[in-house]
Each structure stands twice: as C-alpha cells, then as structure tokens.
Length: 334
Image 1 (cartoon, helix red, strand yellow):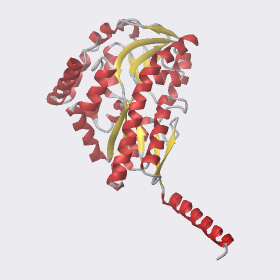
Image 2 (cartoon, one colour):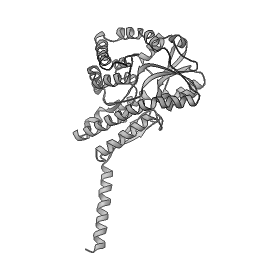
Image 3 (cartoon, helix red, strand yellow):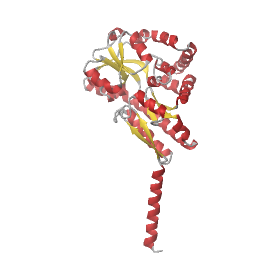
C-alpha cells in the first residue's frame, strides 16, 4: 500500500473512533431555577464537566438553568418520574416528596454554616431520611449550598412586630407557612419566577431567600430593605433519578458521586466567600442592609417547634433535635 493510502486509512480509523465514542456517550439532563450568572449554575456546570471527565466521556450532562425545565417542585417531580436525571433544589421543596424532610427547615435549627454542614454531612437522622427518598425513585448525591434565608421587604424589618400583616412570598413549604404565620405575617405561596414582578406590582410586600438568590434574581431592586434574619439554613441537595443511578456501572456510580461531592464543596466555599461581596454590591445599587434583632426572631418562632411536634411523631422530631444539639456542641458559635 502506498504512503498516501496508509495515511488515508489512519485518518478514517481516527474519524471512526471519534464518531463511535460520541455515539456511545449518554446525555443526562440537569435542571435548576437560577439564572446563568448565579453560583448555582456555575456549580452545576462544574458538576457536568467532572462527570464527563470522570466517566471518560461515557456520560455528558446538559444543564438547563432559569427554570426552563420547570419550577423547583416540578423539577423534583420530573426526577421522581425519570423525565430528567438531576435537579438541585431547596430542602423545603424535597419535603413535598417526603414531609419529614421539612423539619430540616425549622427556624434557627442551626446557627452557622459549620453547624449546618456538619448536620447534613454527619447526622444519622439526615442519612436515614435522605435514604428514604430512594423508594420514591430519588437519590441525594450531595448537598449544594444556598445560604441562610433572609428577608427583603418594601419597608425596614428590625423586629418581629415589623412583619405583622405583611404579605410574604414563600416557596411551597408547610414549615414556612408555620413560621411566618407565627410572626403575624400572611405567607403567600408563589413560584420563584413570579416573585420579582409580584414585588414590583405590590402583590406581595416581601419575600425570603438566601443572599445569592436575592442577588441573582435582583429582588433587592423591588424590595430594597434586606433584613439579615438568618431564619432558616437552606442548602439545596442535588438528586438523581434512582433508576438512572442503578443503570450506572459501579465505576460510573463512583465517578458521578465524586463529581457531585467536589461540586458541592466548591459551591459551599463560593457562597461563604461571596455573601458579603453580594451585600456590598446590592448596597451600592440602592439596597439597605439591616441587621435585625435575630434573637427576638428566634424567640418569636419557638411555637413552630410546637406545631412540628403536633404534626410529626415526637420521636422523629426529637431524633433530629438530638443531632442538632450535637453539632452545636461540637461547633459552637464564637
């Protein structure tokens, strides 16, 4: 065979191998509700890159941002049904699938990021109830960060009495309803995508979300008073359809798990590093940042625990509180 023929044969072989590798890749779909410039999207893209790398291209992940695949509750429904493969959403949204998980949204359950991370990473209660999601065709891979939930309102909020009578937008969560009702507000369930215009038009007076969400959704433009109430620690677990997980080889399961944990670790650090910067940027754009009497809010929300004790088996609530006390003792707030 001539040299030209050998070269042509090699080119054909390479083209075939590349085409065959691409044909063999499986595309997985990942949905979330943050805009493309948010930290959540950056963490999702990191996860996608690592999945492709660690599976040697056997799997690629398409990340769909801004709720294009649905609202948070709908994203989790789609994971449950196997219509999409991954979603990342708030723990209160997971409670729509398994009500007991709503207890993790109890107000002032933890007081610092360190305590919150220890709770989600080491608590036997959390491990047990996360595992119960597998029966609903959902598996938690890791816990991305969102931060503590804060309040943005059309007037300053410094003490619990300031929220009395206010219409506050909340995500669909039984515990959120209990909390704001206990404080004398009128909680109003509304999708994230409707919140900005509802604040702008006066349909609601306030909304509550972590700092990265307030920043990326620009809620401070239409509810300029940001009160750092820290009322709920609100991480956002990453889940996968259980049937999809079971379809992976053990090596690919390990690869996807590794990617999830690394993306989660990056997201946690990024949120902590960026919180103050985001607040400064929002202040520069006209927002007022208020440091309210957090202890007064904590005292005023105690009745939420009574409500939880009436709604859920006492041993379930007490087991969670035992784990939270353990992390508080190990990681005291200085």
